[in-house]
Length: 120
Image (cartoon, rainbow, N blue to C red):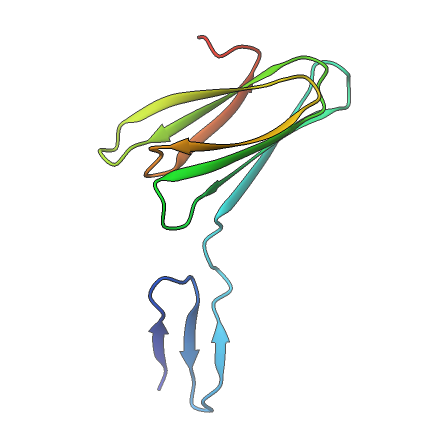
């Protein structure tokens, strides 16, 4: 007989077998997501964008490291509690890094793209 126990507030699930030993769940949800895009200039360089839902808060942390020689627009598609998707845009200056708290991103970021401008 196996019994599953879920600890509230954590991603860990423990399963107890006949021997009484415990094992942690391997498929815990990923909280941090990262994507990279190639720069137009200089060739071979990239911009890396990372976002993470702030635990117990209604915002998302956005971090970026740009090795591009031109500014890039990081466009984020965010869902609110009503399920409506809206866009946020953060400009990453050439060869820079930064971290920003995106307020009111209750349901998290559904899509991230990197373009040359915030408009359009």
